[in-house]
Image (cartoon, rainbow, N blue to C red):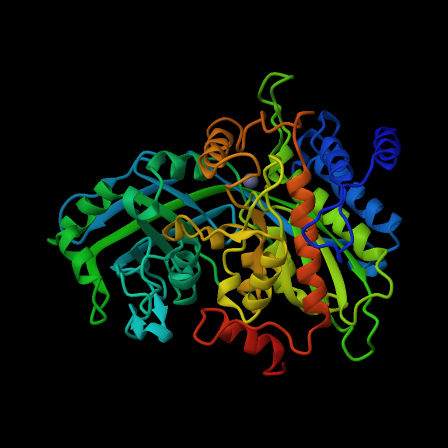
Length: 546
Ligand SMILES: [Zn+2]
C-alpha cells in the first residue's frame, strides 16, 4: 500500500536536471526520497538482520529490481544470494587466567580486563597455552616486514599491538595512512593463519583511535559471523587493556614499553613469555541465514558482457530492540544506509532504461550485515565465482548526507587504481572538487563494503559528498557531519525528515553512473596500481588476464 502511494507521488514530481553533466541521464531526488521514506519507516523496523524488517527490505529491493526489468543474479534464478551466518555471544561464565611458570595464577575480569569471542563457533573452548609476543603480528613482504620470523604459533596465544610500525615515510606502510595491516581484523586473520589458538590485542587508545568503552560495547553483545568456510579461526579472538598487558609481560620480567620499542624494528623476533593463558570460553551459538539482493543488466557485447561494473550498498541496519520501550526502539537508519539503497535503486532504474546497454554488464548488489562487520559484502566477495558475471570495478554507496548540492566528492581509495584519471576528469566535468581523506590514519577505507571487494582484487571505492555544499562553506558541512555523528549515527534518531534535501544524493548517483558508463565502455579493465596491497589479489582473481 505504502509503496504504490509513494510511487505515484514520485511519478508526479518533476525530475531535476543537473547542468553538471548534460549528456548523462538525470536522477530524481524525489524518487530517492520515496525509497528512503519507505526503507526508514516504522514498517521496516530498522531493517534488522534476521528480523522481519530486514527481510521486508530485501524483498522490496528485489521487487524494485524486477520492476525495472533487471535479471535475477542470485541463487537458483532468484534475486537472493543466501548468506549463511552464525550469531555468537560470549557468556559470563567465560574465564581467562594468566598462569606464570612460577608464582600464583592471576584471574582476569571479563569486560573490564578483556573481551573475547570464539570465532570457531563452538559452544565451549578450553585451552591452556603459552603466550608469545609477536610485535604487530604483521607479514608484509612488500615492506620487507615479517614479525613471525618462521616461529610456529600452532596451539599458542599471540599477544600483539593494534596498528602498524610508526612511520612518516609514504613508501613504508604508507606513512601516516593506515594500511590493512594495522586493522584489528587483519590481526585476528593473520595470527589464525599462523596457527594461533587465541589472540590478545593490546588496546591503546592512541593507536586504536577509540577508547576501551568502544571495544567493550561492541564486543560485549552478540556478534555475527559468516558460517565457517575453512578459513582459519581463533577460539578466543580477544582484546586486553594495556594495563593488563603490562602486568602480563611483567610476570615474565619484561617491560611493555621496551617491547613496544623493539616491535618498531624489522629485526624484531617473537618472544615466548613464561606465562600461559588458561581459558574457558563459553558461547551461545545460533545459526541463521541472511540474504544479499543481486540483479543484472546484461551487456551488449558478446566478448565483454562476462565482465561487469558492480554497484553496492548495504541495506541492513540495527533493526528493532525489543528490550527498549516501544516508540524509541527502532533503528531507522535513514542516512545509514537507506540513502545508499535509494541511490542503488535509482541507478538500477536508469541503467535498465539505458538503450543500448553498454558493452560490459552492470551488476547491482544490496548487501546484508554491513553493521556486523561487512559480512554480506565479504560473502559476495568470497563467492564472486558464483555470480553470472565477473565484477571489474565496485562503486559503493554508504550513508550520504541529505544536505543539498555538494561542490565536492569523496572517492578515497580510487587514487590507488588505474581508474583514477577517469575519476578526476569526471569530477572536473561535474564541477566537483575531490576531497582527500581528512584522517587517513583512521583507516576508513577498511570500514565499508567496497573493502570486501577490494581485498579480493576488484578495484573498489565508495562515492560520497565532501563537506562543501552550495550556499555554505566547508565548516558548515563539517558541523552538520559532527551533529549527525554526535546525535543520530547508529541511534534510533537516524530518521527520515521531510526537510531532507536529496539533490546531492541524486548527483552522486549520476556521478557513479558516468563512472560506470566509462568503465563499461573502456578498452581495458581498471587495476590496482603496482605495489598496492591488493595488486596480488587481483592477479590471482583474473589469472593474470586483463
Ligand atoms: Zn552503520
